[in-house]
Image (cartoon, helix red, strand yellow):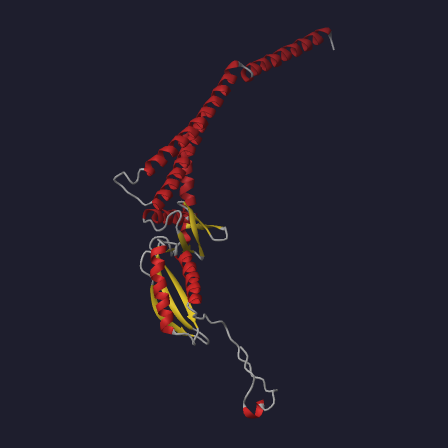
Length: 315
């Protein structure tokens, strides 16, 4: 290669190197320049401010909701305590969903994302999903009518969908029921087709008392009637005079009499236990026997037992 060629090649290499260095300097200024970092800092500050503001709104909103429903007695629209608890939780959950959704949209706007196009696409996608999410729509509609019609509220004892327990939460999609053993059943509202609510009206304690055939039935009835008058005065959970309905069955070794007592909602189990205890103690005091199962045995091995038809009887 001639000297002229070597000079030309060296010159072109030097120009390419300078051009590459220039491009690197431009990229460095664009990436590491003060404007980019200021934009990053501004976006981070917006996100932090949005999250703090969302938390403050939820906290203040929850206090306002509690204060609003706490004045249910003084206000023109009076609601029961059980309905107050239900509406309070539902309103708080709705407020939380709305605030967090709004904060999410504001964060996307901070990144210069076109929210209009995103929402339009989400609407079309939601319409397509809605056709395949009929159960979800059914659950939400059922949840709305459960709350609107006050079918049951938080704290009620209900039986539905094969489970029984206390309602601990009602949402637009699901309801949570806690059974006696502590199990929490999450039931889709669409599956709640029939509800038995034990907490709306007064309950009934039904107690069967057995006495022996050898006992004086009239005396036993009189003793129980006197006891029932005392129980009405001693226990405020009993809202009406207890009744002795009379003899309901003649068993193999006992006569069964039934007691009916109207109680406050959900107090029938407690009053039923109280009545059984008080009746047992009173009958013991009066010498009236509460029978126990008896077995009569005949032995053919005794002398003359088989021929004379006699045997040994044991109880």
